[in-house]
Length: 139
Image 1 (spheres, rainbow, N blue to C red):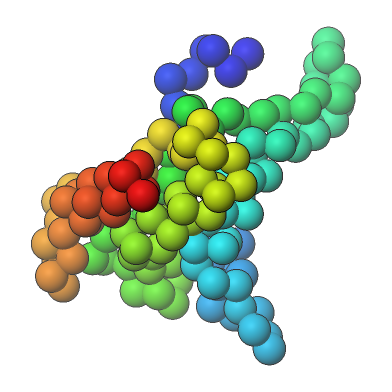
Image 2 (image 1 turned 180 degrees about the vertical axis):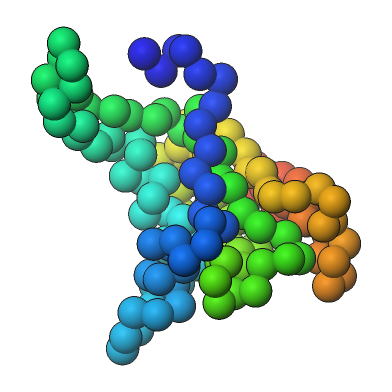
């Protein structure tokens, strides 16, 4: 069950991801980045069905907020093949979750790939994510 894992990360930075498509390519209007993060977190909280699990059949998988980590890229993301997501977008998604679920609806945190790219193009994701996520807990 879910207690097997300390946390589960949604890696939004993967090349040509659905997230990238929804936030940059859908016409006439793409989703706002924070709204796209919010929708994913909300869907994981509510659960999704996996069919034909051996010995189980249909199983509903839910990732509770305290186990969910949002994965973003730092300075290397180009916004064309790899989603470029700001710490402000992550914080705004966190605020949307706070409005819907209250303090228990905040996701566990955020992660990024990769530390050796920290500071590229003037983007310091580690410190900006800490600041952004702390701002949600105090608002």
